[in-house]
Image (cartoon, rainbow, N blue to C red):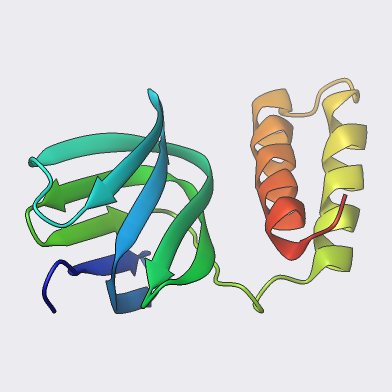
Length: 132
């Protein structure tokens, strides 16, 4: 585990990932942050987006739907409302969710903030799933 660290992604319902990684790139409220072993401790606010990480040189990706990341010398712990790994995304379902959210944003009497959140989530899923 020399120069590697532990990456954990945890939601209220499950531990999505618990793996030893080479590096992590987080999408934070301040922009993208790259993390390597022996990083200075930090707590960051995450936005809706992708977490990119490498395992033995192989690039991998997961979604995060907001939350927090705690970085220590040898560990990154992500607490998020929802997260999915590659292969768990149904792109067709995400595209339909995007269409519903866009339609709901224009409806009178609908919770527009909720529609905006649903739209952001669907766009992250589509991006990860390779859809346009």
